[in-house]
Image (cartoon, rainbow, N blue to C red; front, side, top):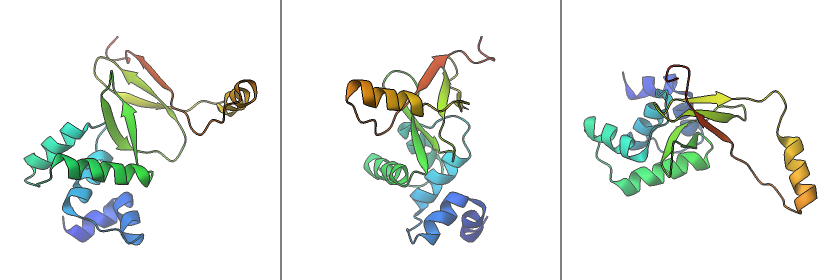
Length: 145
């Protein structure tokens, strides 16, 4: 697949290109890796995949790329147990996650009733301005039960 084909097939790469950002090999690889992964991918897994594909990048470069993509709201950071974090492509709809503690499978969860009413209650009762929230449920998926 040519460089041009990769950009055309991946909407995130296309968006970055249109916005005038450079599409380095490392950036392209990370975006493609996360777009094609079912589960969140850790920084060390990103590094391993880059190395396996003969793309050189140190941990600082990888971290900066992840921070850049997070800042563009293209990828999301997902807690995957303890202090471990993984990354995946963000969905357009605000959602939360169901995280299996055995296989690390992560499923998006969209509530029928938004949590906005709870945010408003917190703001009123506690004199606290909510800027954002993160809600994760940890348990066992259907395959691991």
